[in-house]
Amino acid sequence: MKYEHLLGILVTGMIIGLAYSTKSGRALLAVGIFVAGFLLSYLLTWYYDSRIERVEDERTELIDAKSARNGYAVMSFLLFLEYLWEYSQGNSEVATKLIIPLAAGAAVLLLSHYHYARVM
Image (cartoon, rainbow, N blue to C red; front, side, top):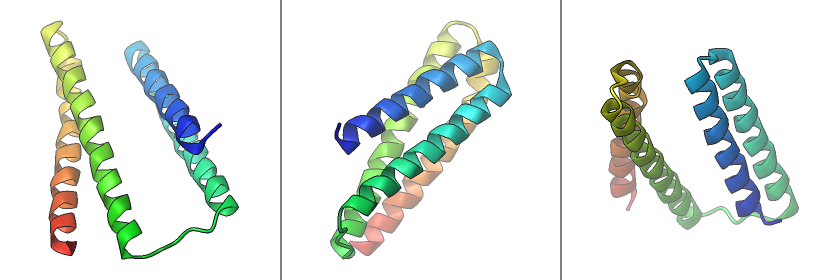
């Protein structure tokens, strides 16, 4: 399998696992899934990078920065949809808890945009 497919499966599994553990109220399970997913994605990237010779220059750094920014934008959009869903279902306690990662994602997007614009 290609790297992108494996990473997509890993991220999808993390999202489903985090949604299940959050809905069931198991905070330790959520933390465990997050840490395991983070470590597995790091190991996958390390393995992939060890098999190829990476070219490091300013262009690749800008592409990585733009990719990270786009990833944050997608995750913020998904969190906002989850916020709207929870709020429309009358579950305002969970919706209020989703404001924290939404605000953090917005701050990261703004900082990334500022940094990317400054570098360009």
